[in-house]
Image 1 (tube, rainbow, N blue to C red):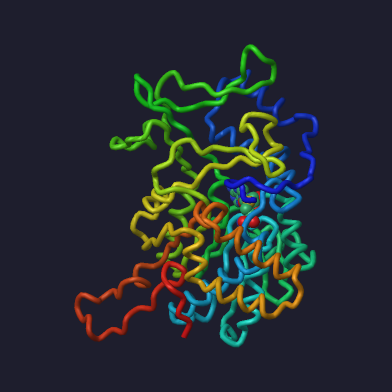
Image 2 (image 1 turned 90 degrees about the vertical axis):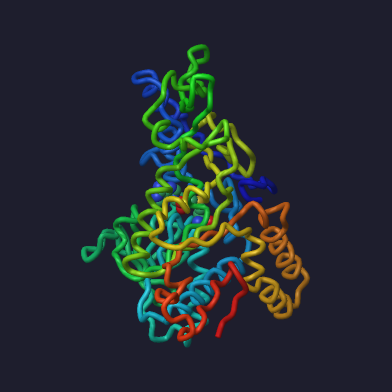
Length: 418
Ligand code: SAH
């Protein structure tokens, strides 16, 4: 199942290779001492040569973890409807960019683009383009195959993108390594299981005050890693722990904060919205750092580069990092969001349209995976950034009676498509 609710196994063998990442880290630790968990996570996941995402990719049934878009097409379809509903609520601007952060195998974008194509008459006068932010060359290849049939142009001269192509439905698609390279403009952003892959710092309350958790080499066992506490305060302890903090162990993901600040500034300036979906909490959980390999929990310090490393997203931190530049909605549980988006009706239509029992069973099974509170229904959350004027009329105070009410934001309340 998902990373949080580890379940049915894939058969793929981890490409342990020659333990090159462990040797590289051990050399580094011996030479210059312990590193922060964030530095360890960044190396293990996105090191350009040996990183987990760079080399292995991980997503999908044959990988290390499975995600909602890989479980059911309905998931991406409902998200596609969310963007159309927001586009309509915002007055149908004549152009928008769909920007996805960490698109995995490209399945989610593919499902969204199918909805855009089915609703082409609604979107007819709108100029849509797709912008994918992906660091992994391996995954960008898989995305290109899925979305364009593999017909792509590397290093296009006219753009800051590293690759471009055209979707099966004729929509231009561009790839970037960083959100900052994506051109400005009215944009709908999407981050599904992206923020949980970004590096976290970990802090422990001790009798002497807050200390940062670091990764070091174990002097007793060759090439084995272990956690240690920093002997004194680190710059991160000073910057990231709030004086009013009541927990004894805290995880902070500054990179997620920086990205949310960027999204919020872009939405404030150019318009649009961002939808973030991930497992996480609202500033209450403590130790959530985990590893996954072959759909099973994996020791985070063993065989780095061969397993996915992840930590729950702290939505309270993301909300704070929006710094009032945009309004925020959520987090709301996945099962509530999908219910509000009409998943039950969509399931009924698909069941009616298919005659065979195997498809029926598959549809019901994937519905259960997405919605069951014991599976992905409760642990995954949806969170949105929206311009303030989307939720409150700017001059409401002056002339409340002259304005028609703003349409509710789908997913966070029931979908009303007019
Ligand atoms: N959204 C997909 C995949 C989730 S896995 C799904 O739900 O199926 C995380 C994705 O983020 C992968 O595509 C990974 O390569 C990408 N990624 C991880 N760290 C990144 C970073 N720092 N910048 C851009 N992409 C990153």
